Amino acid sequence: MRAVLLNETGGPEVLRIEDVPRPEPGEGEVLIRVRAASINPIDWKFRRGLVPKQLPAVLGNDISGTVEQTRVEGVAEGEDVFGFAPNGAYAEFVVAPPPAITKKPPGLSHEQAAALPVAALTAWQALFDRGGLTPGQTLLVAGAAGGVGHLAVGLGKHAGARVIGTGSRRNRDFVLGLGADEYVDYTSQDVAEAVSGVDVAFDTVGGETTKTLLPTVREGGTLVLIAGAPPEVEAAERGVRAELMKMSPSRDQLARIAELIADGELHVEIAGTFSLSEVDKAHELSEAGHTRGKLILLP
Image 1 (cartoon, rainbow, N blue to C red):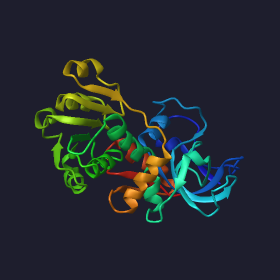
Image 2: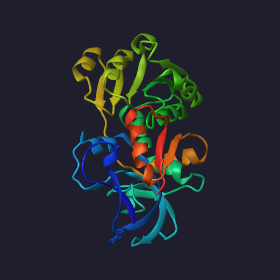
Image 3: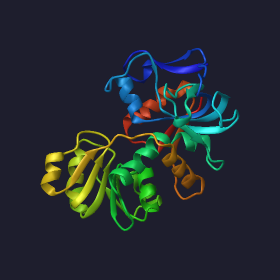
């Protein structure tokens, strides 16, 4: 089969398509023909060497595809599934255990399904498991047009929250179209001055953005980050809980989110689709940090 291998760290040009042996499923595993895989920021961070990873490696976590071979009771050949590829997703075939995958709803395309595992679970767990968001509360999402951010906006609205998104001017109409009640263009407005009394602030960007979000959160509120160190001292002085979140795989949560999209109650944006031979272009776009929605590979 063909797979994208990372043999050394560096720019997008170090990603190489190679012919490698097709994996064989062991007892309790299924072999999946990959129909779509998605790119997440952690992928190019591994590629750059910013996050340690044993090499050589196949990058990627998110897949959607069709069961080619099964050694698991209750999982049939020909079933469409999606979820996590433990040994890398940028390939024509992957092997996965049942806890890592779940059935794909018929109303969900492979591209949509592949966009969900990391991004959607990160948004869900940040808002509800860590943020404790409830109906009627106010949610602030920084980076609201991104792969995680746009799903957070949709999930927040579905949960009955008032949602404020931040981003550049070009994404205003897109984020408001997702249902956001308000939008702050950080290039022309000071977020800390424009917003206050937030119950949950979700920072998908990190860095300097975190400093602008903390003053917007009310006393007793929560700031959830997925990049960078939480400002624990400053947050404690304001009576705010600030914490860094790491996503945990959950078949149940993933299935619930997929059904929301299949039923038309939640939107997942596909920013672009690429063949394996175009993986370098996809990585360039992801690393640039201005992508609206998710980037998808089609093996």
